[in-house]
Length: 215
Image 1: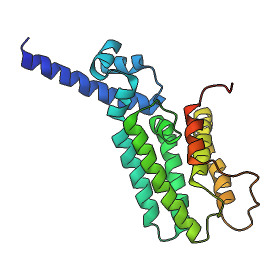
Image 2: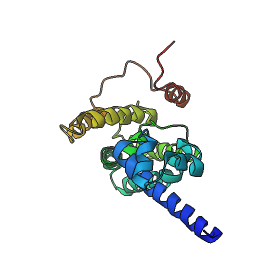
Image 3: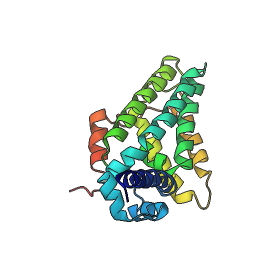
């Protein structure tokens, strides 16, 4: 086989792996077995490591661009809404819909993913967009003043778990739960909260320790 044919074959393998990984991650989340990706692509698992080096590198090759596009669109739609509260609600609902429709995005949004550099940048960008959307609603007096963008992580973490456990039985159950949450975030008759929001530094420590029992 000529060098040109070998290179063409290698490119096809990479293209098949990227396409298959996108499908498997969407269906099963970012922690899906790499064997499932390899089987879908019709290659060996060793080919994944040979071409990408690690799960993290494969995820960074497949997920960030798509995740950024979807999250940017959700943020843009929210900011385009004339009513700041409706924009905030539209953003939160859209992000939760992304979680429900794509388990890869569910893991991205709830930060349930390995340490991937490109994906980390997408998450940071998305959080800053959410901050602007929330501050706009607060400035309008519609979103309760003690809300912090870090509180949104609790909403998305909770939604991630609800989606995973109810998808086969009641796939829209998350919408009811979110409805209660959004009502509680509206300014007006809300009660004072018993504790402060997490700081960004606390969020980072929480995320770094996920999955490990406290000492």
